[in-house]
Length: 124
Image (tube, rainbow, N blue to C red; front, side):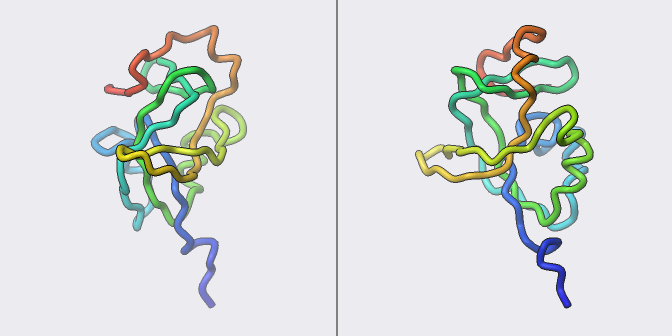
């Protein structure tokens, strides 16, 4: 019998070290696929040093939409529930189409401790 939970694809938006050509992209499990570039309105990106974080705000965050068969390796990397928390949020693509996907967000308390990345794009 096939375990549907392990074969079901999950859409997730990544905006930092998990993006293509970034050092943590290798954490995506086999079978994961990049779909397209997207953005999140009503959020802002913070510079935490060697990686970014995203909180609710009044800016736009740019990221990549991926399909992955298993979220467990991403949850472990992002310390889901203890550092980042994974939520379903609405994204918009380059031609205005909207959809919903998982995204990892920081607690709002980080807003006062870190500098905002004004253009919402992580480049390191």
